[in-house]
Each structure stands twice: as structure tokens, then as C-alpha cells.
Length: 232
Image (tube, one colour):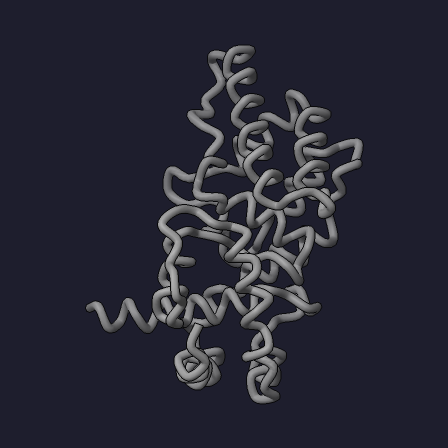
């Protein structure tokens, strides 16, 4: 990636952090805090733990919008077969295992469990599990459990960032591990005191206050907003 291009975007990101457009992403930090507070993969009431963890009182679009409702589907599966879902989350959160393998297995497990759920409850009004969504929900589960390492993912966003920051090669398919590495690599460019001051000023009391890869994700969304404005 080309450092001058990164620094050019960082210069614009710094004042953007204080705008209303930027604040629209704060519910992600709120959800991150809720996940840290409430989710326990070993909880007796796994569905209750999950319900309280995946929550935002201000905006829920990152997990519920229009016809997209993965939370509803996961709750249905958890209430039906909590121990199988528990095993899926345990595997997903096993940091000593290969990341690509973990996320692929998680989606596979959810798909298998949902198919069994539909067979057992043919009258259930849950059309799909929504977790085959370009790793969006998997990334949110990882973001909640390991705030410093993960952030919401989409292949389109990864491709845009690689293109605009001058990467030598742009992925043609999903590459969640590469995205995760970018979150760490670019963090040093956001260490400026003005950025950190704006960051502290913007976060609300209900938001996660610790070290979070969401800061870099926020930077990515700024770049995306700039390019969308240019395209109009």
C-alpha cells in the first residue's frame, strides 16, 4: 500500500470523525460493549446471553434491517439446540486455530443446524439463517469477543480499501484473514493525538472504550463515503 495515499485519507478522516455522518456508526461500539458485558458461551441460558449481547438501543441495522434478521434465526436455533450452537461458537473463538477454517466451519455449522431446525419445525416462520452473508455476522461475533482484532467485514469494502490505498493486488474473492491483517497494519496511521482526542470525544458512555479495531473500520467507512460522494 502507498503511504502518501493513506496519509491523504487520514487527513480527511480526522475532522470527519466529529460529523453526524461519522456518529452513525457508534452503535457498533455499543454492541461491542454489550457483547463484552453479556455474552458467555458457557451460559446456561445461551439464547438469553446472546439476545442481551447482540443489542443496540440506538440503531440495529448491523444485524437487523428490512428482510435481513440473522439474530432472530440464531435465537431460534439456540433455543432448539443450544449445545450444538455452543460448540460452534467455541470453535469460532479458538484463536489457536486457523482463522479461515474457523469462519468457514462456523457458517457450515449454522447452515447444517438451521436445516435440521427446519426439518424438525416445518411450520416455523424463519425463512433462512442469514449467516451466509459474506462473513458479516461472523465478523460481528468476532468483533464482540475480541474487540482489538476484528471489525465488520465485507468483500466489497476490502476490495475498495485495497484499490484506493494502492495495494499491489486486489482480492477477487472473500479474504477475511487479509482484512483482519489490514485492521492491524493500518492502526499505526491513526495514532495521532488529534485523532485519538476526537475518538475519545465522540464515543458515548454506552460505547466500548477499550482498544478496538472499529477505529480502523471507521477509517475504512470514511474512505468509502468519499468515493461514494465522488461517484455521484
